[in-house]
Image 1: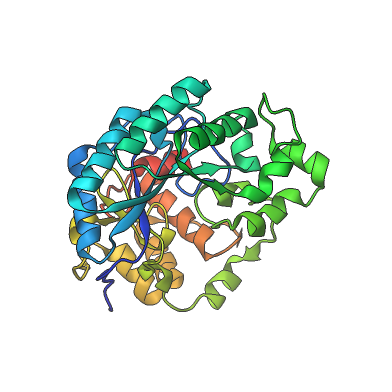
Image 2: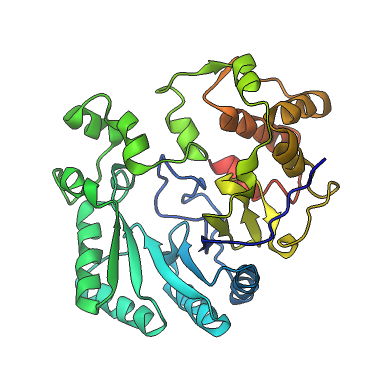
Length: 328
């Protein structure tokens, strides 16, 4: 069997925390208020950043969860990045922390002194279910005053989100009522959604499903996306998430090395032989009973892994973090 090997990294991010003020229906990482309130330590941040730099990546973004929920810890991460020579491209935020202009500007100025140059401000109907648009506008305005660059993701949603009452939240159903029944479906391409994580649950009843046999037949090869290094993430627990396949993990310490079969049987099986081999393994070894239909091989893979983690109580370094499987 050909083993997975992450020998270099191109572009990615550092996940500081999974707990969040929102529980967005598109969240790849299943973040939300239910997660344990843990934030990356300076030591783990340094370990992660030194490793990614050694593999050729000299700049990262910072995301979560919501990184701004612990500003002092975010400052420590910025200080670590400067210490080890890794540039911070931007820090993501949903703007929930905004209370008033004075406090926001003071915080942004402090973060700017530590190396923060750009903030990615989330603007979307998914976020608007939890964050009133006036907070988003407040952060954008504070950035302009403090001299911090703004990266709105996505600017195209500003007219739509701004068409509602800006002082309260609005459900996706409200957006569908105003902009049409296909609005949420169209968000897949407009937002560039990755159909994994919580997105699978959100769109389970909205997209065409295919028989299990067809899913297995058309996905006969290996899952080569696991080796994609174009947009990676490393998290506060020291996990590298391969190919944006959340819930799968490689220990940061093991990056750069061939992944052994004993420690990483699932990842190597998926990478080399694909979902069919993993399905057969799960049925024979863990008594997995599939549904009749799935959206994709990714939904089938997640269903298998959730069964192994939740129902069979398997604790494995390659199926992490465990809270992902209960919170997604």
